[in-house]
Length: 95
Image (cartoon, rainbow, N blue to C red):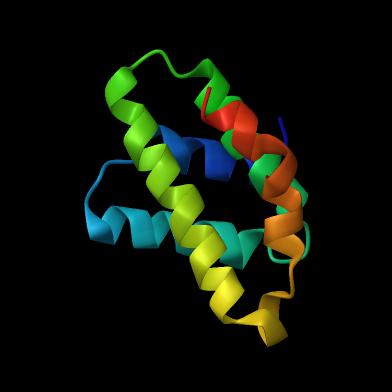
């Protein structure tokens, strides 16, 4: 695991349903992974897949939703990179 992946992994592991936590994690996604959103999406998928705590699934869905909505509202800044990166993992994340 690279340092970048470790940063997002630790953010996702400590995630809860509070708006400030979701927004803070979204900032980590968009700030550190703006140039390569595939790393962020793959790390999100790995955390979803490895999670054994059922209470952790909802915050993980919230962060995915927040990232996709935030980046979708700023297409000049982010393009469709995040949507394209998350697309292959969405179905797997919701099984």
